[in-house]
Image 1 (cartoon, rainbow, N blue to C red):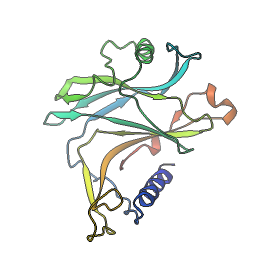
Image 2 (cartoon, rainbow, N blue to C red):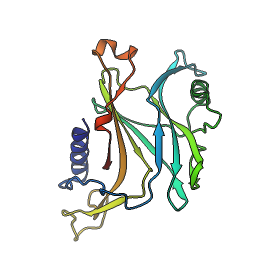
Image 3 (cartoon, rainbow, N blue to C red):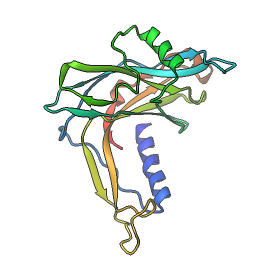
Length: 216
C-alpha cells in the first residue's frame, strides 16, 4: 500500500503541475539532521457526544510521546495525516473539540497529556523534557480495509530536488515549480483483520514490518 500511495502521490503532483513527476527519493541511510524519538500507542476509536449534534461523533486517536535526544532545541510542529486504501485523506485536528479531547483524556489516564495545540513549540533536550499528546482524526471511509498514518515534523531532513521540466521563460508558480521539496516522514501502516462486514467491530493491526521512513 505504501508503494501505491507514493506512486499516486507523485502522479497527482505531476497532474497538478502538468509536468513530469520527479523520481521518488529515499531518506539518508543515517540521520543527517536532528531526529526526535517518537513513541506511540495503536489508534483507537471513541464516540463523543458533541453539543448540537443529534448523534455521537466518531473519532480515531493516537496517543504519543516525543523526546528530543539531539544536541539542540527543536521547534516541534508535527503533522499527522491518515490515508486510507480508498484514497481518503484526513488531517489530524489541532484545535479539537473540548469534548473530543476530554474523552481521550479519560481513556488515556495520563496526567502529562497535552492538547494538540499546546504540544506545539520549542522542544527542549532530554528525556525529562518529553511531551505527551494525541493525534485526533475524524472517522473515515467505512469501506476502507487499511490505512497509513504519516507523521511529519520528527526530523530535520529536507531534500530539495530540481524540477527538470521547469520552464525558465515563465515565472515560478504552482504550475511551474523550480524545485520539489521532500521531508523525512514516518509511515505507519495498519489493516483491519477479517472482512468488511466486521470492520467496525475490530481493532486495526499495525503492519510493523512495513513501517518505514520515507521522503514525502
